[in-house]
Every structure is written in structure tokens, then in C-alpha cells.
Amino acid sequence: MKKLINDPGKVTLESIEGFALAYSLIVKQVAPHAVARKNAPISGKVGVVVGGGSGHEPLFLGWVGLGMADAAVLGEVFASPAPPLILQAANAANGGRGLLFIYGNYAGDNMNFDIAANLAREEGMEVESVRVWDDVASAPPERAQERRGLAADFFVIKVAGAMAETGASLSEVKRVAEKARDNSRTFAVALSPATVPASGKSTFTIGENEMYFGIGAHGEKGVRKTTLLSADETAKILTDEVVNDLSLRNGEEVNVIVNGYGSTTLMELFIVNRQVHEILQARRALIHRTEVGNFLTTQEMAGCSVTLMRLDEELKKFCDAPAFTPAYRL
Image (tube, rainbow, N blue to C red; front, side, top):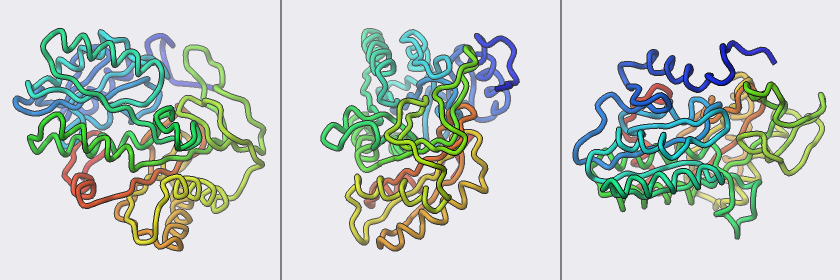
């Protein structure tokens, strides 16, 4: 796979520098691996700190700004940021009302963000964490806390950031972030693997006429390979898995994400979205907002995921609140 890079060991550093230059009216680079919103830290406001491995852009950098995250920190491609790097982002977001860490439920992230939280507490900061675990393919419902994080990161960060903007306490920001997480589910499919820049190796192997359901954000093992299906057939499998795991009932309201994994075109995603809407309407679900595009990518992997979040009036209010970030504006 050909890539426009310089040194494979510097792709994260150089991409963050370029990102900060591109969106300098919204964010500022506060450390080699971290950016913060332009006016951070904001006194008297809970700071929302997000992060994980790079290679998933616009996750997490793209959601820093008004109404979403106060700071984001990235590790190397598909690798968790080290605790000292997370602490740099925490300091940049610390407005004196506490910090909420939001990240995907992966072993490296869990360990490193926990260590960073303890380091921040030693410096006098109050820190809470929310791990996102929306991937229905990675564990059964009774072991939901073992599931991986996927595109529902967006919903959790959006809701938490909107609540933080109101001046709410750290406990309240954490509460609504957990509510968003616990009402969200995702199921994904890949048509081709990704290539890690440092190694040049594919994340998995797949036949020319195959697709792989249930893959993780780094190309982790899925649940089944099939022959290539049509967009409508694929959308039905993705949507049915999410609806059934969410136990969605007639008349309930949802927000939808049809997410692309890097090389899937918007044309393809819109075709999938068309069928997702038809399926949800047939199930008498009410669709409030739909997002289509790249939210969590895996380098140049082809494929998509469907995410649903069940809404109540509180979640709807925070989903509809203003946001102004490099990758999302409302």
C-alpha cells in the first residue's frame, strides 16, 4: 500500500502538527501528541479529555472544540498514548472543576489512562473516566464491559461535552456520558484490511470476493466472513444486529451513525444509509439525527459500521446542543 509519509516513525507527530496548523482558529497544539481547544483551559468548567491511538482520524482530534472535547491526545498508530502524554492533555484542559477521560475500551488505553488519572490526582486534579464499549461483536450482552469501543465514541463525547458546557459538575458530566455509552451499540464490516505505516503489513487477510463482519477498529478478529453481499443485504445484517442487541422497541427514538472506515466512498455510505432508514422505519423506530461519513476510520480500510443510540429527552437535548470542532459543527 502506497502512503504519502516521510519517516514511518513520525507519522503521528507530523500529522498532529499539520492538523493544528489547518484548524488553528479552533485548536492549539499543547504538546507533541496533544491538542486542546483554542481557549482551554476554561476556568470553572469540567475538562473533557479524549484519546487513543492515531490512525482513526477524525477520532479523536477532530472533536476538540466548543461543545465537545477540551483536549485530545494520540499515541502511535493503533497504540495507546503513554501516561505522561495523557497527563499533558489533562493539564491543558484543567479548569479547576475536574476532568473526565473518555476513551475506547482497549487494554492499553485502560491501563495508560488509569495511570495518567492517578498521576493527575497526585497533582491535585479530580479525575473520572468513561470507557466506551459499543461493539456488539466483541462480547455478549452479559459481558458488555468487555466489549471494544467503536463509533459510539462520537455520541459519548458529544453528550459529555455539551453537558460540560452548561457548567455541570464532574459527576453529572460522567453520568450523562455513561448514559450515552450504555444506550449505544455498533456493528461493523470490512471489505479490505488496513496497512500499518510502520510495518507496511495488512491488519488481516481477506479474499477478493469476501467481507468480514464484526471486525474491531484495528482490524481485530471479526465473527464471520461471507461472500461479498449487496449494500442492502449488508445494511440489514448490520442494523439487525444493533437493533436486537439494543432491544429497541416500537416508537423509541434513535440517533444513527453510518460510519466509513477510510476508503469507503460517501456514495456507498449513503446507499447503506438508505436501507438503514428503511429497516428502522419498518421496525417503527423514530430517527432523530443521522450522521454519515468518516467518524472512526482504520487507515485505508474499506468497510462501514452502523451505530444507534437510544434517546431520551436529556440525551436528545445534548445531542442537539451547539458544537464547533474541526470535524463536526452543529
